[in-house]
Image 1 (tube, helix red, strand yellow):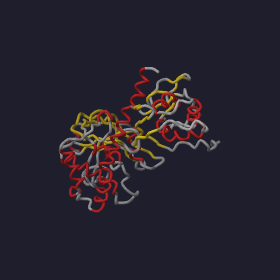
Image 2 (tube, helix red, strand yellow):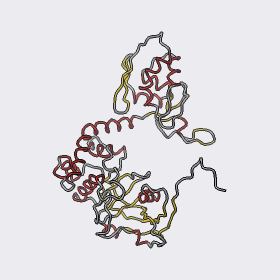
Image 3 (cartoon, one colour):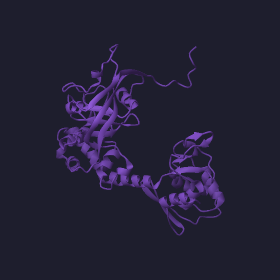
Image 4 (cartoon, helix red, strand yellow):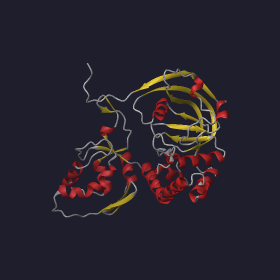
Length: 365
């Protein structure tokens, strides 16, 4: 066993004689030995599948290949099934372990047919610690978040009267959530309007009174949304549409701060940020607003409350993960002050988005 692999196993397992305990997701499990030596290996292996299977997060097929070889192992901490079984306390009988390996599959890509030497990717120590923090945050705040959401649906403008609403305001005001700056190259998008050719100003933030209600602003409240990448901006305006013509404008933004950061970056998550972890884990800030075309959007009530708390506490905006694409967005509250630090890059361009072709549909001649 190499030193690197030894550290992987040590990170996920604590051995105490023949009784083994290891962290798995949001629970701890225990596997006991000895077992009945007369039992069929396949039958005995089935006892361990439920315990060991969640550990197999990735495998060799999930990694990028070049020239028929794994170029670099990027998903999960690299180990093999023998070491996983050692760490999980699976008895050392070869026939049992071979039977167990044959019953496992990759949780990510579904690859099956493993043997004892199969390389897999398991949760690293950091991933397990983060999952444990999410578990504790869910236990601490999960029910309270659901109750607060129901409270806002009954009385949308009285969030501060709820104990969790008061706690969110106090936490934001005390700067206990992460902060960041907004600066660099960003994108905005709009759906095409007939044959109209958009000018750069058509991609500006809407004026006061014209803005539709959205996740972090009330109807008529003008704010500026910026996407981290072109594809993020397109995905945000397309919504559930399968095809559309979309106008794109690039912007350069000089630094603006402080920004309340709702984008989870594991190395920045501290033990004291359980409330933020609970809000993110519950999807309370990322739920759909409501039915298409409906004026009632209860899914936006809690995110807007957080935005109001941030605005009241002196933040210039929020950074938050996109719910439609791999990337993030900024919402900047003071449109007029932002415009002084915002410059357009080139003219808007129009792009076409179509649904991917059906691989089972015969080509049109």
